[in-house]
Length: 208
Image (cartoon, rainbow, N blue to C red; front, side):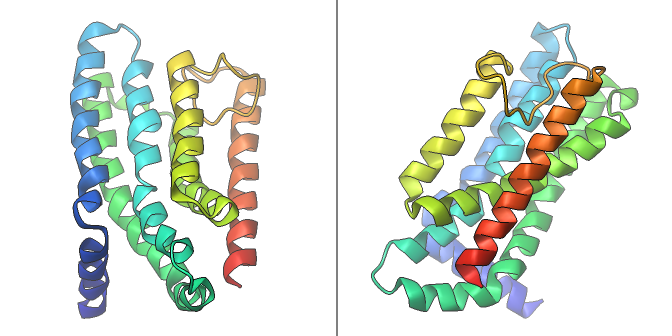
């Protein structure tokens, strides 16, 4: 427990005010979900706020923390250090943010009813969470630049959410309506699986 507290304290000192960005976004997401529930008849608008805002921002901490690896000349030295704690970091921030996502899921169920969250949506939300926890980190390892990484993630997510998946034919990782089509379900899960596998491979190659 002392080791865990030490790591979090170190991260807070390292990131400064940027550390609160995900938590502030979660709070904003609550207001958006409440607003959507009042203004829209579709229960999926509430879920869009959860999957399109809260879940993507959940991977923000890892991106910010590991951006330091590529910002100073002694990159290989830092890679050697982060190699030892990569899995530990993914797990501790995964658990931390999953707790907040569960709280937002609770609000979603309160607004839409318990029957809204079907087994398909449960599996989708878990896979989407895993995807955003490591996909941004994998892009960072590929681009070696925080600004480019954030721009790529934000652009894709923003376009997908705003256009509700109509801008690009594929890949899609979100559900904007009830997933009744087998083709839609298959392609969405296929996108998530490919993204997760590619991310794991990239991270393994960089930190092996």
